[in-house]
Image 1: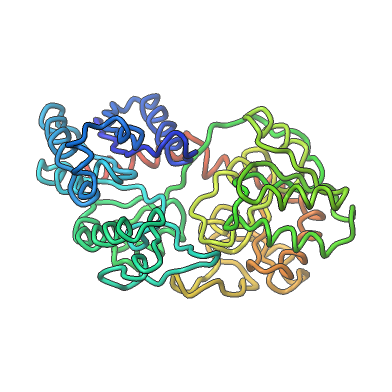
Image 2: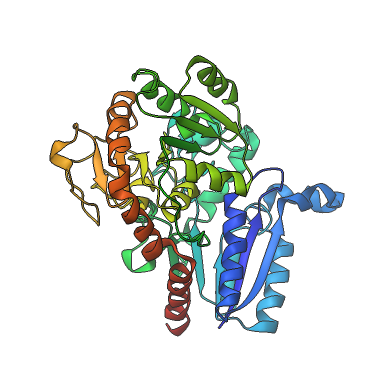
Length: 422
């Protein structure tokens, strides 16, 4: 099988889990015997472009002529079975879908964000969930609020791009939704069920989990949408030391908030930014990993890392978090805002101990989810501290069944094979 993997890499100065996932997926496919033809561009190229090329940049999200010419040559020469698209912006453009179809090549796209609808891709603005552009032909609110790169002009361009390419997106042969929440987003956009496959990302197997540690670990970007304010407010509702240690790792604009909390309480430790060895050590020292996002986080990789290490997760009931911990719950259509978590799970969640839990806490296969509210998180913290040992083995099992590279690579190859035959 011969696959073109198309991706516009984010700038190296902007840490990107999406870049990491694409690189890992290419390596995993190659190891599985798939011939991969990378069609990659990087936003880092923009700085060194000649003046004439830079002059065309404003239209490149709509139509990138150089990318279409180069892709057409690649498709003509190699006659691939499938084109697999990740991020098309700004140097590839969604027009690559049309170019592939013109050459008789079916297209798969992995949906890493909500940019079919939202100019920023996040469904998050001014510290809150925002879906003002849902259902609109043209995302005028995105222009008004400068949602794309803080620029009204660039936001207008992106909103126009999304309007122009509605038909393009609806022609994609198969969408890979990283979680059930992304699948809901695609259905809401008008994509039929038969063209959506839920397939998460995977991470390399770190090996047998170390013995369970103590306390909680927050690992990620220290920014408002990751819920640090929510977490620290919930933590302060418990006397110092009663929950065990809280370790916080990462960097970002809220670092002063974390440093102040660590100075205020003996049970809060700020670890700073960690390398891979440091992440492994922090996971080993902890019993529960926290995913306290206050936006519809698509697929926080830290949760998969936690499960691979046999650590259950306490998270908010937003975005892909319930799916990742095996606690999918019935949701209102994306954009109606977080609803109270149901008292019994569906779609693979476990009802173990639900009746004994405070209202709003849902136990899943590999962790717990709660509404993104301080009172709910505060109530869930002691539940997770007491229940970590009971879910540790299940957490590792969920990783092995759902997120191991061998599993996700086989599922991806099956997707390719299905549309290549159609």
